[in-house]
Length: 356
Image 1 (spheres, rainbow, N blue to C red):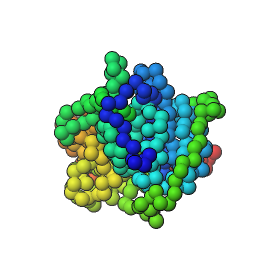
Image 2 (cartoon, rainbow, N blue to C red; image 1 turned 135 degrees about the horizontal axis):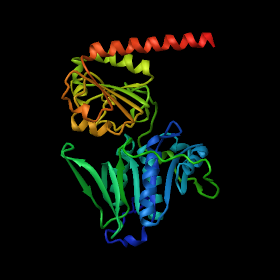
Image 3 (tube, rainbow, N blue to C red; image 1 turned 30 degrees about the horizontal axis):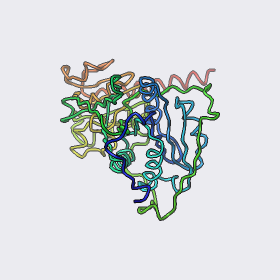
Image 4 (cartoon, helix red, strand yellow; image 1 turned 30 degrees about the vertical axis):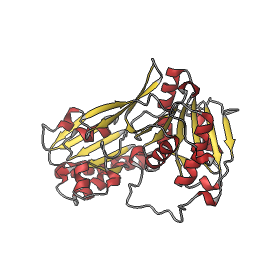
C-alpha cells in the first residue's frame, strides 16, 4: 500500500499525538482571515494542554505570509512550497497534508469551514480514519482526558451538540469563518527559526482534476466575513427589487450587501450574500438589518457585530432585542431619508475642505 494510502490503526496510543495545527487556507497567494481567527482559538486550546500551535501553509512563493502567521500567533509554521500548490486541488493538498499528519502526529487539526475546508477536511479524515466535526462554533478542552469538545448547531440550530473523538487521533474539525475572534497581530514576534520550509514530492500525475481556469461568479464585491460594513435585506423588502435600495445604502456606506435566508429561498438574491446559521457568520463594525425580523438562525450569524442598526416596521420584531439602534418604520421611507442625510453630510464635508 502506498504511503499516501496508509491507514492509522484504530487502537492507537493517543499519548503519541501532540500539538494543535491550523490549516492556513490561502487564495490568490493571500492567507484568508479565517486562518487568523483559527490561530487565535488554537492558542487557547494549546495553552490548555501545554502544547504549541503550528500553522500549515501550502502554496508557492508565500514566504512573506509564512512570517505573517508567526506574527499572528503561531508558534511554528510548516510551509510546503510547490508550483502545484499555488492553486487548490483536492488531490495535491490532501496528499501533502496527509503525509505531514501521519509523520508528525498532531493531536488537533483545525480547518476553516470554507468551500475548500469543507471538501479537504472530510477527504483527510477518511484517509486517516479519524472523526471530523463540521461547522463548529465553540471549541474547548476536557482537561481530564485532553479530548476536544467540539460544539456545533444541530437540528436546524434548535440545539447545540457537543461532539468528542475519544479513541482516534488527530481530532479534526472545521470552524465557520467569523465565529472566532481574530488573533491580534504582534510585530515584535520574530519568525527566526520558527518556519520550516519543505518541498513536497508532487507531480502532475498526482492530480486527477486540474484547474484550467478560475472565474468569479455572482459573489459579493468583498467576502462577507471580511467586510467592515454590511447592509442586509430580509423578507420585509417584499421582492427582489428591494435589493436595489439595499445596494444604494451599502455603496453609500462603503459596505457590501447581505441577506436573510428567506430572501435566498425566494431567489431574490444569490446565496453568496446569505448571513446566518446556514449562511455566513459575520462580525462587521456596522451591520444594518433592513426588513429582517430576527429569526434565531439569522441572529446566530451576526449578533457579534460591533454595532447593529435595525430598520423594521414591526416594533415587536426580535431583531430589536439585540440591536444597538432601532428605527421603527417602513424601510422604503427610512432608507431614502438616510441616503439624503448622508448626501448632506458629504456636501458639508466638501465645503469644509474648500475652506481649509
